[in-house]
Image (cartoon, rainbow, N blue to C red; front, side, top):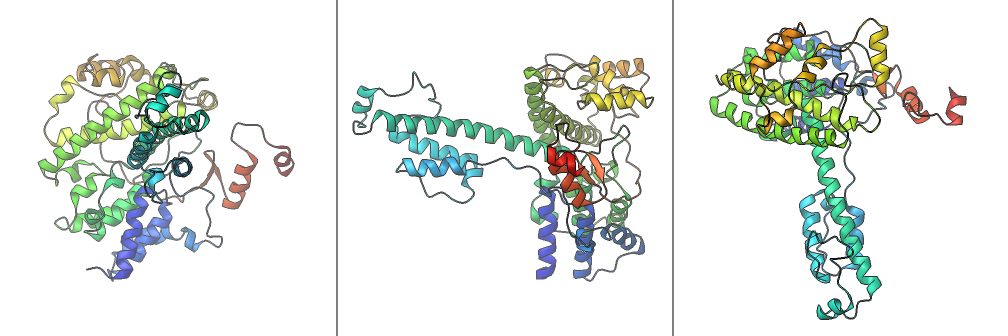
Length: 457
């Protein structure tokens, strides 16, 4: 059994898999964990963790970051449940977290609906309400029309709230998975079974959760020198390492070859299901207003937030799907179904910046524009064999295999560690206190600034 100090640190690292802590702060926790377990680190790992941990919030004089350390959480139905408790007599005891649990919310709607003889889904204000005679027959003769309508409207609003909550929770899950794959879904027991495994997963996931920077170049790579140093420790003790847990976040060939076929199949089934869920989100966003596929520049009416979150999730899932198929020896599946990448929508000012700096659209955009849409491929409405993808890539001068269109990408080379910048709408700011002020002033938001903010600037 681990000591209380080790247990606390492992729990904190496991919790970070669903949060958005800075990699520096996770590195500090990892160093504390090794110290609590009295593990002597090799010089390379100790140096890498010290380099990152030096910039943790605990080592800064202000101990503050202006950026949220969690992914945006949907607003629950606590207010609606409290209102239901004041209007209905059969509301069960409401737990503190009931407003965030769709199952409990639905159970309340069904149960209290019985009081006014309303079933789930009966939301038509003209057709589904009981008239005076209907209320009398149902034994509601003592309830006024006003009181009955008040309860009916509340349940209708609660169903709408339930639908929104499910959608937003699903979007949050998609966002987290797009950034850090299935690391957040690892049970604590699997995560904490080996210290080196836990350290690597926690750090590489924190790196994956970093926010995008407003730039006309490449985004910061996930796999850096700290992640590489932690991975070297896994190689030293391969028999102790939990490779199946590692595969949830880092699906390289070296990792997957150490995972059993049964576990690989389990992951493949899970990613298959996730790809279909993300395809539905992409299709919903597309149907609200089709995109300009030839440029992928966002236009008025495009749901760019949903699209970009889903696109990143699709591409992450696709990387894992390709890697798992290859390791299982099922590459012939790609001869029939070779899922393409999905590019993110780009703001017009970023596209202009690219052109002015001598760049242009990424070749992937042209390839995407010629391939069938993802949801059409998954439903079998259109074919997307590997031969088609190779032909389109060749037409645009892209090496389909090397660029990850038809084969898993090669393992990334470790990049140098760089501290996490404070961001205001994607723009790097040197100081977190200044970042808070700029964000409050509406700077970089694309919206007009308040008069007070203009004076301050």
